[in-house]
Amino acid sequence: MDVIALESLGYEYEDGHAALRDVNLKVKEGERVALVGPNGAGKSTLMHILAGLFIPSRGKVSIMGAALSKKDVAAARKHVGLLFQDPDDQIFMPTVREDVAFGPMNLGLSKEEVESRVERAMGLTSISSYRDRAPHHLSLGEKKRVAMAGLLAMSPSILLLDEPTANLDPQSRRELVNILDSRRETILIATHDMSAAFHLADRIVVLKNAVLYDGEIPGLLRDPGILQEARLELPSFSRLMQSWAAETGKRFEPPATVEEALDILRHNYCCRGQGDGHSH
Ligand SMILES: Nc1ncnc2c1ncn2[C@@H]1O[C@H](COP(=O)(O)OP(=O)(O)O)[C@@H](O)[C@H]1O
Ligand SMILES: [Mg+2]
Picture 1 (tube, protein in one colour):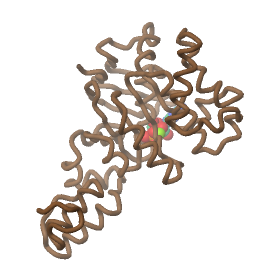
Picture 2 (picture 1 turned 180 degrees about the vertical axis):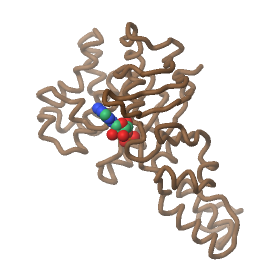
Picture 3 (picture 1 turned 30 degrees about the vertical axis):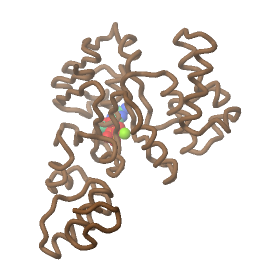
Picture 4 (picture 1 turned 90 degrees about the vertical axis):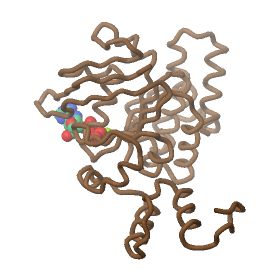
């Protein structure tokens, strides 16, 4: 089933600025899609529309098979959870624990269920130790974890994540990627972090106010024109391998992950059968 369907979607801000033009996008249940593109591409705008926070100027939006209209945005919000690009837009309660509990409490769940969801979400995002601190005193990266915990505690079936790894330290970033990797929800992640996008997503949508590319990772890696137009940069290991291919004349697909890069090295250059214990 398509849990998200956008048809000829357009969005203009009040000043007339066209943020989105003729966007068509379908996302299936359980799919993980990375939304990439330069600053100002309309990624955050798109996520606000999907979360029922902005009403599109034209086109159709369906969430879980139901057309999104002004009167049933509440229904869509039950299924969709948005992690805002700026956590200050999301967290507002006096303590971290209360903030994570705010959403589930408003779902009308029992006290025990709220408690167990809050504890689980705080554990997953490693914020249990600052449960009594004021969210507005935390660092940006810490705030992002609090916002992520609040989102997970709501258990939405569609996670919309707006630049979730930006401003996280490397360890926190890896932890977040691992958390997301273990989830079963449908995930749409807007990011400039191509390494995280390639790790998590099966499908990449390149947005620059309109959709420039929608497909699998290898097709995008082979298309330097689109990458350049969208001001995207491949992960450093990928660029290294491309330069190496150009220098040696060897032909191989540019790698999307460190593991793929390692496999290319094993196959092409040395150490056949060494290192990882399996032969090629
Ligand atoms: N409130 C607003 N009024 C007018 N233009 C806006 C407003 N908010 C965002 N924009 C513009 O819409 C475009 C898309 O913004 P945004 O969705 O935030 O892009 P992204 O998240 O991809 O960086 C940008 O050119 C931005 O300047
Ligand atoms: Mg944005």
